[in-house]
Amino acid sequence: MTETDPSRPPIQAGPRRRSTLATVFLTLFLDLAGFSILFPLSPALLEHYLAMEGKGGVLGGIVRAIESASPLAMRDPVYAAALFGGALSAMYSLLQFLFAPVWGSLSDRIGRKPVLIISICGMAASYLIWAASGSFPLFIASRILAGAMGGNISVATAAAADLSGASERSKAMGLVGAAFGLGFIFGPTIGGGLSHIDLSRLFPSLAALGVNPFSAAALGAFLLASTNLFWVTFRFDETLPRERRRKEPPRFRNPFAFFSPSAAPGIRRTNILWFVYLLAFSGMEFTLTFLAHERFGFTPRMNGLMFLYLGVILVLVQGGIVRRIAPRFGERRVAAAGLGLTVPGLALIGLAPRAHISVFFAGLALLAVGSGLAQPSITSLVSLYAPPDRQGAVIGVFRSLGAFSRILGPLIATSIFWKLGSASPYLLGVAILIPPAILVPWLPDPRARAAGAAGTEAREGEERSAVPLPAD
Image (cartoon, rainbow, N blue to C red; front, side, top):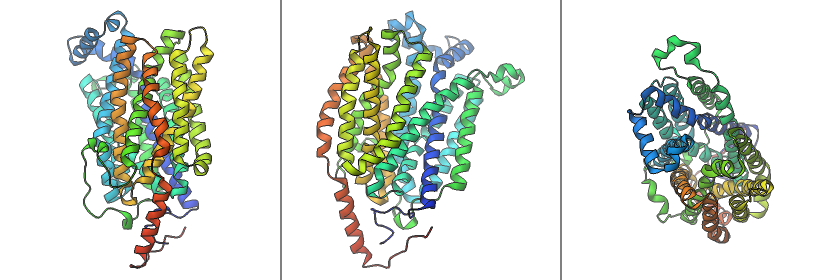
């Protein structure tokens, strides 16, 4: 068996491979936890910088524009805060959309480890800038840098694909999904806890250095990034051997190339499927707290518990169920089942009566199980379709597409939420997800492609000297 056999990971099964895969899991977890520390702080951030700069500054102009566009925001500041948080999220997603293909292509050329180290260093620097953000423009600069460096998620996902053969790809992507889920559970919890520590009050002299009420949360994120950097530097074994790297310089493709035909069958259709799915999911994600508040009177604490409920189910499904059923039934069937469960989940959430909160939670459970099945299965599909020397580039475009969905989804969902009512984003999600749920089983068989590629590689191996796999 040659080293370029796509059906076998470059690091042999055993302690070494498991250790590296565990490092990939920890890398994703620490990265997502550090990123999501900001989530519960958006309203307070808005209040802090408005109080500091007043309505006449840059932020004041943004808030005035929000209030003029939404009468609700003029009556209740929570809507302005929500739209402010949405704008921050959209800016971060836009930068991920632009840079994820860059990092992915570069990692195909020089390897996963150096790109991970560079991007994690950039994330750590963004958190330090945030910790010293004595002004709103400096805080925005920190978010711009964080968004540009956020493409390391696609590189870590490509590393997980490197470590898994075709028969184990869904297990690896389930582990990636579990890392995402845990990161999004613990990150906001850490951020909420650190938000009670105001370093500018404890150490007033540091205010001249830009220390602000959110510096403790920023330093918490920096500590997570520093731990991540140490772990990757000393515990991460390179997953892409030199023999598998692209020989030509990396092509930094137009991010909109995800709609163009691809030489590898199935990639374009899977990318479009991912775009549609995340369009519906991100719209739900961003409007869910407002629906829960409007219909059931949820407080911020209850909203936090609601997301914990969703997160726990997602982690259990992605980390446990997917890895057991995908090898047996195949990624296409599991993805179809996930989309099939997401559709009634969205419908129940959107139509749940005020007097029947149990219907709402049943919808949340269906949504969480469906998403837990669909997300790793779709990621596994695009990874299986990708040639071995283009994993980083293909997954980079795939993640970039997801970021693009996270720009459009919340904008569309919030617009129709306020215009047509709280059920409208969920019914729209149902409508756009039914066709993909029906069509996903008709995608090309990825295991047949992997088997064909393995045969081609074996034939090519007879014409050149085989390079033995490294021993554990």
